[in-house]
Length: 277
Ligand SMILES: C[S@@+](CC[C@H](N)C(=O)[O-])C[C@H]1O[C@@H](n2cnc3c(N)ncnc32)[C@H](O)[C@@H]1O
Image 1: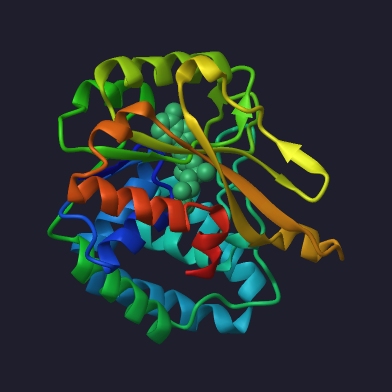
Image 2 (image 1 turned 45 degrees about the vertical axis):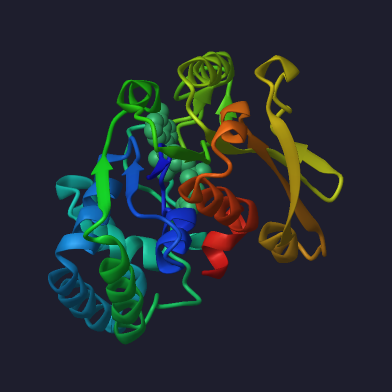
């Protein structure tokens, strides 16, 4: 089983499922509305597509104002179809919040979002590949350690690292560096095999501090392609991402499920993959 404690759009799990490399998946994310959307994608696909289609058609008269109405409705009722529409139209498809915890990302006014037919095709492919073998949950990553069972491989792509939780209100939650390091020690002690996307660099800029050597992690650098942010700012810069491999992966590397998850994550564990897929 491939477990993603910080699933987000679950790019690695989707790829692993589409390539038939895993027998089961577990998507966890502290953002409950996002997990509600995942459940709708997996188990209520047709209804979700129908609602999206109605919204997509209705926006044509005044796309800017329509986005604003859906955003206000989402902040009140947290409905999965509204979140799907917002993510399809939001700048960079990114979830951002204001200090009151409301979704406040602006629309990308150059685009109307994925056409319903194309979106339906993508969601159906994902649902067929994942609905029968995917477990979902919405708990804090720290509590997931109690759910570890042998046979699982974890892939983690945590959010922006702050010095304390919820320091930056733009994000659903940031993680505290010292708490996260303690958590990684726990994972090692409990025998959890994991892969972790953490720090990296774009051009001259680095982000995130490399993890301490006491954790015994192997650090692999992956070329994640041209940075979209730099491109928007008129620069041509490549992004290099660090992927950390835990010592417990070594022990089970010969097992097929680990090889699959390991290889998939090595090949595709980069934020840019989510955009490309
Ligand atoms: C960088 S994103 C993951 C992106 C993902 N790899 C993808 O393919 O889209 C980090 C995710 O962690 C989630 N998150 C933040 N704090 C969390 C926490 N304490 N426990 C679990 N998930 C959390 C966020 O909601 C966000 O979706």
